[in-house]
Figure 1 (tube, rainbow, N blue to C red):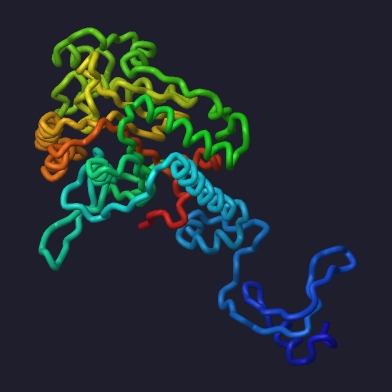
Figure 2 (tube, rainbow, N blue to C red):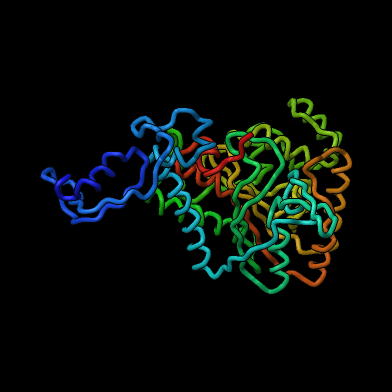
Length: 402
């Protein structure tokens, strides 16, 4: 009221526009309608908005503006604001879950001398002082496993990963992952850990019971299905890769099923993995651990002792998308060097995602690494799942734009 604040303060109030910040002193009260308010005695103009804000009822309609000017989206769209609060809560709860189990959060370098720990193209940069090319990390794996060698038996890192690859609804060049490593654990232990992490986060943000994702009920609260990759392929296609076969025989089967064969497919394991990606991934709706990946596509995973064609590795799939990748870690330096050399050969044959040879990591293994299980989870995809979002850009505050 003008008589309560005085002429000068009232003029300040009258000149305020939508988006301005005002400081108001007075007595907290409720209006006749019961709304919380302030009986103002003094008004200060704190900040002036020079541009009009979006209309709150409809929010921003231009998708480009939503992503480029996220601050306007947050102001005008409460649903978007709440989604990012939920994202923060998911990450906090993952930390809480791991901390309670004795894991230590650590930080490892973002700049690497050699890309490693994943099959991906890196971003390349240059360090002027040392006059050397470096890459932005494509994974945190190899540094975290060096810490296992050093005696840190339970470690994890949540951080940004950079991959110089395409963009789509589930891929952004810069994204957040968590990697977890536990000494004296195998991939069965890590399956249980993965299930626990995801179910804990889901329960906190969505409550007990299944969740709904784009109209599909996901039984995230129930034990996740577990199936060997070869069995999954056989169920869908009838092809039995348990049988011993030559590379030429595998290529012939691929030709019959119209599965493309790349130049760098030099082992039967490459064909098995291609069959899985072609026929099985699209069928995995409910949470499913697919394990037993071929050695050819798992350069850092330990071979299965009962069938050394395959590894003790798994991937978690939900709604046809991969949410986690894990394995019993390869801790034999001789075998690891051989796998790195096979990757380098694949790179020469045109596999752009094959890794180079990290001799320093091999040297670390030569000092001895205990049996270890490791895990990587894409935080952004998990946030998409738990916020019922169809594009990764909606869970990244500032997605990559042209």
